[in-house]
Image 1 (tube, rainbow, N blue to C red):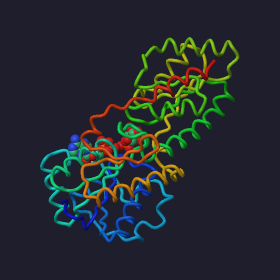
Image 2: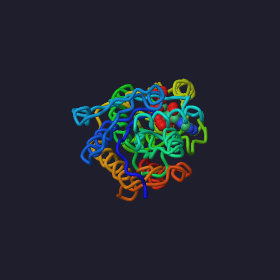
Image 3: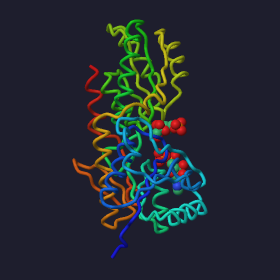
Image 4: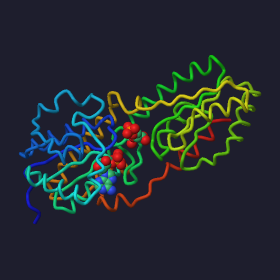
Amino acid sequence: MAKKITTIGVLTSGGDAPGMNAATRAVVRCALANGLKVKGIYRGYAGLLEEDIQDLTSRSVSDSIQKGGTILYTARCPEFKTTEGQDKGAEICKKHGIDGLVVIGGDGSFQGALRLSERGVNTIGLPGTIDLDIACTEYTIGFDTAVNTAMESIDKVRDTSTSHERCSIIEVMGRNAGHIALWCGIANGAEDILLPENYDYNEQRLIDEIITRKKNGKKHTIIINAEGIGDSYNMAKRIESATGVETRATVIGHIQRGGSPTAKDRVYASAMGVKAVELLLEGKTNRVVAYKAGEFVDYDIAEALNMQKTLNPYLMNVFPKLNS
Ligand code: ADP
Ligand code: F6P
Protein backbone atom coordinates (compact mmCIF):
# COMPACT_ATOMS: atom_id res chain seq x y z
CA MET A 1 0.00 0.00 0.00
CA ALA A 2 1.22 3.54 -0.84
CA LYS A 3 2.65 5.51 2.10
CA LYS A 4 0.21 8.17 3.30
CA ILE A 5 1.41 11.64 2.42
CA THR A 6 1.70 14.38 5.05
CA THR A 7 3.04 17.44 3.25
CA ILE A 8 2.20 18.81 -0.18
CA GLY A 9 4.43 21.23 -2.07
CA VAL A 10 3.07 23.43 -4.83
CA LEU A 11 4.92 25.37 -7.51
CA THR A 12 4.20 27.24 -10.75
CA SER A 13 6.65 26.90 -13.64
CA GLY A 14 7.18 28.13 -17.20
CA GLY A 15 5.11 31.04 -18.54
CA ASP A 16 2.57 32.37 -16.03
CA ALA A 17 -1.12 32.03 -16.90
CA PRO A 18 -4.28 33.64 -15.48
CA GLY A 19 -5.96 31.10 -13.21
CA MET A 20 -2.74 29.73 -11.76
CA ASN A 21 -3.62 31.46 -8.48
CA ALA A 22 -7.04 29.78 -8.41
CA ALA A 23 -5.30 26.42 -8.82
CA THR A 24 -2.73 27.18 -6.11
CA ARG A 25 -5.48 28.36 -3.76
CA ALA A 26 -7.47 25.18 -4.35
CA VAL A 27 -4.43 22.97 -3.69
CA VAL A 28 -3.65 24.83 -0.46
CA ARG A 29 -7.20 24.91 0.90
CA CYS A 30 -8.09 21.34 -0.08
CA ALA A 31 -4.85 19.98 1.37
CA LEU A 32 -5.29 21.88 4.65
CA ALA A 33 -8.90 20.67 4.90
CA ASN A 34 -7.55 17.12 4.72
CA GLY A 35 -5.09 17.68 7.56
CA LEU A 36 -2.01 18.00 5.34
CA LYS A 37 0.74 20.60 5.60
CA VAL A 38 1.37 22.77 2.54
CA LYS A 39 4.62 24.32 1.39
CA GLY A 40 4.83 26.92 -1.36
CA ILE A 41 7.88 26.59 -3.58
CA TYR A 42 8.60 30.01 -5.10
CA ARG A 43 9.92 30.63 -8.65
CA GLY A 44 9.32 27.13 -9.99
CA TYR A 45 12.20 24.66 -10.19
CA ALA A 46 14.70 27.53 -9.76
CA GLY A 47 13.22 28.23 -6.32
CA LEU A 48 13.16 24.53 -5.49
CA LEU A 49 16.91 24.27 -6.14
CA GLU A 50 17.51 27.41 -4.05
CA GLU A 51 15.19 26.14 -1.28
CA ASP A 52 12.93 29.17 -1.65
CA ILE A 53 10.21 27.31 0.25
CA GLN A 54 7.68 28.61 2.79
CA ASP A 55 4.80 27.13 4.78
CA LEU A 56 1.44 28.18 3.39
CA THR A 57 -1.71 28.74 5.39
CA SER A 58 -5.24 29.36 4.23
CA ARG A 59 -4.53 33.10 4.57
CA SER A 60 -1.50 32.87 2.28
CA VAL A 61 -3.86 32.42 -0.66
CA SER A 62 -6.52 34.92 0.44
CA ASP A 63 -7.46 37.58 -2.10
CA SER A 64 -5.70 35.72 -4.93
CA ILE A 65 -8.42 34.01 -6.99
CA GLN A 66 -9.14 37.16 -9.01
CA LYS A 67 -5.49 38.05 -9.63
CA GLY A 68 -3.57 37.42 -12.84
CA GLY A 69 -0.01 36.13 -12.81
CA THR A 70 1.12 33.76 -10.07
CA ILE A 71 1.60 34.67 -6.41
CA LEU A 72 4.21 31.88 -6.22
CA TYR A 73 6.19 33.57 -9.03
CA THR A 74 7.57 31.48 -11.87
CA ALA A 75 10.81 30.91 -13.70
CA ARG A 76 12.53 28.90 -16.36
CA CYS A 77 15.35 26.81 -14.89
CA PRO A 78 17.84 25.21 -17.31
CA GLU A 79 19.64 23.45 -14.40
CA PHE A 80 16.55 21.34 -13.77
CA LYS A 81 16.99 19.70 -17.19
CA THR A 82 20.19 18.04 -15.90
CA THR A 83 20.23 14.81 -13.85
CA GLU A 84 22.26 16.63 -11.16
CA GLY A 85 19.56 19.30 -10.91
CA GLN A 86 16.80 16.69 -10.74
CA ASP A 87 18.66 14.66 -8.05
CA LYS A 88 19.15 17.85 -6.03
CA GLY A 89 15.46 18.81 -6.45
CA ALA A 90 14.29 15.40 -5.17
CA GLU A 91 16.70 15.58 -2.21
CA ILE A 92 15.41 19.06 -1.29
CA CYS A 93 11.81 17.81 -1.41
CA LYS A 94 12.77 14.99 0.96
CA LYS A 95 14.68 17.38 3.25
CA HIS A 96 11.58 19.59 3.57
CA GLY A 97 9.28 16.61 4.11
CA ILE A 98 7.49 17.23 0.80
CA ASP A 99 6.09 13.84 -0.13
CA GLY A 100 3.49 15.12 -2.61
CA LEU A 101 4.14 17.85 -5.18
CA VAL A 102 1.76 19.73 -7.46
CA VAL A 103 3.45 21.29 -10.51
CA ILE A 104 1.37 23.87 -12.39
CA GLY A 105 2.84 24.54 -15.83
CA GLY A 106 3.18 23.33 -19.39
CA ASP A 107 4.80 20.37 -21.13
CA GLY A 108 8.32 21.45 -20.13
CA SER A 109 7.31 21.64 -16.48
CA PHE A 110 5.72 18.17 -16.77
CA GLN A 111 9.07 16.78 -17.97
CA GLY A 112 10.52 18.03 -14.68
CA ALA A 113 7.58 16.55 -12.74
CA LEU A 114 8.18 13.17 -14.40
CA ARG A 115 11.84 13.25 -13.32
CA LEU A 116 10.84 14.00 -9.70
CA SER A 117 8.31 11.12 -9.74
CA GLU A 118 11.07 8.79 -10.90
CA ARG A 119 13.03 9.95 -7.85
CA GLY A 120 10.28 9.05 -5.38
CA VAL A 121 8.43 12.36 -5.01
CA ASN A 122 4.70 11.81 -5.64
CA THR A 123 4.06 14.37 -8.34
CA ILE A 124 0.91 15.63 -10.08
CA GLY A 125 0.91 18.08 -13.00
CA LEU A 126 -1.78 20.68 -13.67
CA PRO A 127 -1.91 22.09 -17.22
CA GLY A 128 -1.13 25.80 -16.88
CA THR A 129 -0.42 27.62 -20.13
CA ILE A 130 -2.19 30.18 -22.29
CA ASP A 131 -1.09 28.23 -25.39
CA LEU A 132 -3.55 25.28 -25.03
CA ASP A 133 -0.76 23.12 -26.46
CA ILE A 134 -0.98 20.18 -24.01
CA ALA A 135 -2.20 17.17 -25.94
CA CYS A 136 -4.02 15.22 -23.23
CA THR A 137 -6.45 18.00 -22.33
CA GLU A 138 -9.10 20.12 -24.04
CA TYR A 139 -8.58 22.90 -21.47
CA THR A 140 -5.46 24.54 -20.06
CA ILE A 141 -5.43 27.09 -17.25
CA GLY A 142 -5.15 30.58 -18.77
CA PHE A 143 -6.21 29.96 -22.36
CA ASP A 144 -9.74 31.29 -21.91
CA THR A 145 -8.55 34.55 -20.33
CA ALA A 146 -5.78 35.00 -22.89
CA VAL A 147 -8.14 34.52 -25.82
CA ASN A 148 -10.63 36.98 -24.36
CA THR A 149 -7.89 39.55 -23.71
CA ALA A 150 -6.52 39.13 -27.23
CA MET A 151 -10.03 39.34 -28.69
CA GLU A 152 -10.71 42.65 -26.93
CA SER A 153 -7.39 44.08 -28.12
CA ILE A 154 -8.08 42.98 -31.69
CA ASP A 155 -11.53 44.63 -31.59
CA LYS A 156 -9.74 47.89 -30.77
CA VAL A 157 -7.26 47.50 -33.62
CA ARG A 158 -10.18 46.77 -35.90
CA ASP A 159 -11.80 50.15 -35.07
CA THR A 160 -8.78 52.11 -36.24
CA SER A 161 -8.08 49.74 -39.12
CA THR A 162 -11.62 50.27 -40.45
CA SER A 163 -11.47 54.05 -40.00
CA HIS A 164 -8.29 54.25 -42.10
CA GLU A 165 -9.38 51.52 -44.54
CA ARG A 166 -6.18 49.67 -43.76
CA CYS A 167 -4.98 46.10 -43.62
CA SER A 168 -3.90 44.97 -40.12
CA ILE A 169 -1.64 42.04 -39.39
CA ILE A 170 -2.18 41.15 -35.72
CA GLU A 171 0.19 38.69 -34.07
CA VAL A 172 -0.98 36.63 -31.11
CA MET A 173 0.99 34.33 -28.82
CA GLY A 174 0.95 30.54 -28.72
CA ARG A 175 4.58 29.54 -29.26
CA ASN A 176 4.43 26.88 -32.03
CA ALA A 177 0.70 26.26 -31.64
CA GLY A 178 -2.12 28.13 -33.36
CA HIS A 179 -4.96 27.68 -30.86
CA ILE A 180 -5.08 31.34 -29.74
CA ALA A 181 -4.84 32.48 -33.39
CA LEU A 182 -7.63 30.16 -34.52
CA TRP A 183 -9.97 31.25 -31.73
CA CYS A 184 -9.24 34.96 -32.28
CA GLY A 185 -9.63 34.56 -36.03
CA ILE A 186 -13.16 33.27 -35.54
CA ALA A 187 -14.08 35.47 -32.56
CA ASN A 188 -12.82 38.67 -34.22
CA GLY A 189 -14.28 37.98 -37.66
CA ALA A 190 -10.86 38.11 -39.30
CA GLU A 191 -10.42 37.81 -43.05
CA ASP A 192 -7.53 35.37 -42.70
CA ILE A 193 -5.70 33.35 -40.03
CA LEU A 194 -2.11 32.22 -40.45
CA LEU A 195 -1.50 29.07 -38.40
CA PRO A 196 1.86 27.33 -37.90
CA GLU A 197 0.06 24.00 -38.31
CA ASN A 198 -0.93 24.61 -41.95
CA TYR A 199 0.41 27.92 -43.32
CA ASP A 200 1.86 27.42 -46.81
CA TYR A 201 3.80 30.74 -46.87
CA ASN A 202 1.93 31.69 -50.04
CA GLU A 203 1.93 35.45 -49.50
CA GLN A 204 0.79 36.07 -53.10
CA ARG A 205 -2.56 34.47 -52.19
CA LEU A 206 -2.96 36.91 -49.28
CA ILE A 207 -2.07 39.82 -51.57
CA ASP A 208 -4.53 38.75 -54.28
CA GLU A 209 -7.30 38.34 -51.73
CA ILE A 210 -6.70 41.80 -50.22
CA ILE A 211 -6.92 43.37 -53.68
CA THR A 212 -10.08 41.43 -54.55
CA ARG A 213 -11.76 42.28 -51.24
CA LYS A 214 -11.00 45.98 -51.78
CA LYS A 215 -12.52 45.82 -55.28
CA ASN A 216 -15.60 44.18 -53.72
CA GLY A 217 -16.02 47.04 -51.28
CA LYS A 218 -14.38 45.69 -48.09
CA LYS A 219 -13.12 48.60 -46.03
CA HIS A 220 -10.36 46.75 -44.22
CA THR A 221 -8.61 43.42 -43.83
CA ILE A 222 -7.75 41.81 -40.50
CA ILE A 223 -5.19 39.01 -40.66
CA ILE A 224 -4.44 37.12 -37.45
CA ASN A 225 -0.88 35.85 -37.51
CA ALA A 226 0.32 33.24 -35.01
CA GLU A 227 3.57 33.80 -33.12
CA GLY A 228 4.89 30.53 -34.57
CA ILE A 229 4.94 32.22 -38.00
CA GLY A 230 5.95 35.65 -36.72
CA ASP A 231 7.63 38.22 -39.00
CA SER A 232 4.53 40.45 -38.80
CA TYR A 233 6.32 43.79 -39.24
CA ASN A 234 8.15 42.70 -42.40
CA MET A 235 5.03 40.97 -43.69
CA ALA A 236 3.11 44.26 -43.31
CA LYS A 237 5.74 46.13 -45.35
CA ARG A 238 5.68 43.52 -48.12
CA ILE A 239 1.89 43.44 -48.26
CA GLU A 240 1.61 47.24 -48.34
CA SER A 241 4.05 47.55 -51.21
CA ALA A 242 2.42 44.73 -53.21
CA THR A 243 -1.22 45.83 -52.67
CA GLY A 244 -0.97 49.59 -52.32
CA VAL A 245 -3.19 49.20 -49.23
CA GLU A 246 -1.76 50.85 -46.10
CA THR A 247 -0.82 48.00 -43.78
CA ARG A 248 0.15 48.00 -40.11
CA ALA A 249 1.42 45.26 -37.83
CA THR A 250 0.43 44.89 -34.17
CA VAL A 251 2.11 42.33 -31.93
CA ILE A 252 -0.16 41.95 -28.90
CA GLY A 253 2.55 40.34 -26.78
CA HIS A 254 2.48 39.84 -23.03
CA ILE A 255 -0.75 41.82 -22.50
CA GLN A 256 -2.55 38.58 -23.41
CA ARG A 257 -0.80 36.69 -20.58
CA GLY A 258 -1.91 39.04 -17.80
CA GLY A 259 -5.15 40.22 -16.28
CA SER A 260 -7.85 38.90 -14.03
CA PRO A 261 -8.87 35.33 -14.96
CA THR A 262 -12.28 34.67 -16.53
CA ALA A 263 -14.90 32.71 -14.59
CA LYS A 264 -14.02 29.61 -16.62
CA ASP A 265 -10.33 29.86 -15.72
CA ARG A 266 -11.14 30.42 -12.03
CA VAL A 267 -13.60 27.52 -11.86
CA TYR A 268 -11.71 24.93 -13.92
CA ALA A 269 -8.39 25.79 -12.26
CA SER A 270 -10.05 25.39 -8.84
CA ALA A 271 -11.47 22.01 -9.87
CA MET A 272 -8.06 20.89 -11.12
CA GLY A 273 -6.37 21.97 -7.88
CA VAL A 274 -8.83 19.91 -5.85
CA LYS A 275 -8.39 16.94 -8.20
CA ALA A 276 -4.59 17.08 -7.74
CA VAL A 277 -4.93 16.83 -3.96
CA GLU A 278 -7.48 14.01 -4.27
CA LEU A 279 -5.06 12.05 -6.47
CA LEU A 280 -2.23 12.52 -3.97
CA LEU A 281 -4.53 11.42 -1.12
CA GLU A 282 -5.31 8.27 -3.14
CA GLY A 283 -1.57 7.56 -3.24
CA LYS A 284 -1.26 8.38 -6.96
CA THR A 285 1.86 9.83 -8.51
CA ASN A 286 3.14 10.78 -11.95
CA ARG A 287 -0.29 11.91 -13.18
CA VAL A 288 -1.47 14.95 -15.16
CA VAL A 289 -4.95 16.32 -14.53
CA ALA A 290 -6.85 16.93 -17.77
CA TYR A 291 -10.29 18.01 -18.97
CA LYS A 292 -11.77 15.67 -21.54
CA ALA A 293 -15.34 15.39 -22.85
CA GLY A 294 -16.82 17.31 -19.93
CA GLU A 295 -14.91 15.56 -17.15
CA PHE A 296 -11.81 16.13 -15.06
CA VAL A 297 -9.63 13.06 -15.59
CA ASP A 298 -5.97 12.12 -15.18
CA TYR A 299 -3.24 10.53 -17.28
CA ASP A 300 0.19 9.10 -16.70
CA ILE A 301 2.66 11.96 -17.31
CA ALA A 302 4.85 10.04 -19.79
CA GLU A 303 1.77 8.90 -21.70
CA ALA A 304 0.41 12.47 -21.74
CA LEU A 305 3.72 13.86 -23.02
CA ASN A 306 3.70 11.36 -25.91
CA MET A 307 0.26 12.40 -27.18
CA GLN A 308 0.08 14.64 -30.27
CA LYS A 309 -2.07 17.74 -30.12
CA THR A 310 -3.76 19.05 -33.25
CA LEU A 311 -5.96 22.07 -33.80
CA ASN A 312 -9.67 21.33 -33.55
CA PRO A 313 -10.44 20.19 -37.13
CA TYR A 314 -14.08 21.26 -36.93
CA LEU A 315 -13.13 24.82 -35.94
CA MET A 316 -10.56 24.90 -38.76
CA ASN A 317 -13.34 24.02 -41.20
CA VAL A 318 -15.71 26.56 -39.71
CA PHE A 319 -13.43 29.54 -40.36
CA PRO A 320 -13.38 29.51 -44.20
CA LYS A 321 -17.19 29.25 -44.24
CA LEU A 322 -17.50 32.63 -42.49
CA ASN A 323 -15.78 34.70 -45.14
CA SER A 324 -17.93 34.71 -48.24
P1 ADP B 1 6.30 25.17 -19.94
O1 ADP B 1 6.23 24.39 -18.68
O2 ADP B 1 5.32 26.29 -19.99
O3 ADP B 1 6.26 24.27 -21.17
P2 ADP B 1 9.17 25.47 -20.31
O4 ADP B 1 9.24 24.58 -21.49
O5 ADP B 1 9.97 26.74 -20.33
O6 ADP B 1 7.69 25.94 -19.97
O7 ADP B 1 9.62 24.59 -19.05
C1 ADP B 1 9.58 25.15 -17.74
C2 ADP B 1 10.69 24.55 -16.92
O8 ADP B 1 10.49 23.14 -16.80
C3 ADP B 1 12.09 24.66 -17.52
O9 ADP B 1 12.68 25.92 -17.29
C4 ADP B 1 12.82 23.57 -16.77
O10 ADP B 1 13.15 23.98 -15.47
C5 ADP B 1 11.73 22.48 -16.69
N1 ADP B 1 11.94 21.55 -17.80
C6 ADP B 1 11.68 21.77 -19.12
N2 ADP B 1 12.04 20.69 -19.86
C7 ADP B 1 12.57 19.79 -18.99
C8 ADP B 1 13.14 18.48 -19.14
N3 ADP B 1 13.27 17.89 -20.32
N4 ADP B 1 13.55 17.84 -18.02
C9 ADP B 1 13.42 18.42 -16.80
N5 ADP B 1 12.91 19.65 -16.60
C10 ADP B 1 12.48 20.33 -17.67
O1 F6P C 1 3.99 29.62 -23.18
C1 F6P C 1 3.39 30.86 -22.98
C2 F6P C 1 4.06 31.91 -23.82
O2 F6P C 1 3.44 33.16 -23.58
C3 F6P C 1 4.10 31.62 -25.32
O3 F6P C 1 2.87 31.92 -25.95
C4 F6P C 1 5.25 32.48 -25.76
O4 F6P C 1 5.87 31.93 -26.90
C5 F6P C 1 6.20 32.43 -24.59
O5 F6P C 1 5.44 32.03 -23.46
C6 F6P C 1 6.87 33.74 -24.29
O6 F6P C 1 7.77 33.53 -23.27
P1 F6P C 1 8.52 34.72 -22.50
O7 F6P C 1 7.54 35.37 -21.59
O8 F6P C 1 9.62 34.04 -21.77
O9 F6P C 1 9.00 35.68 -23.56
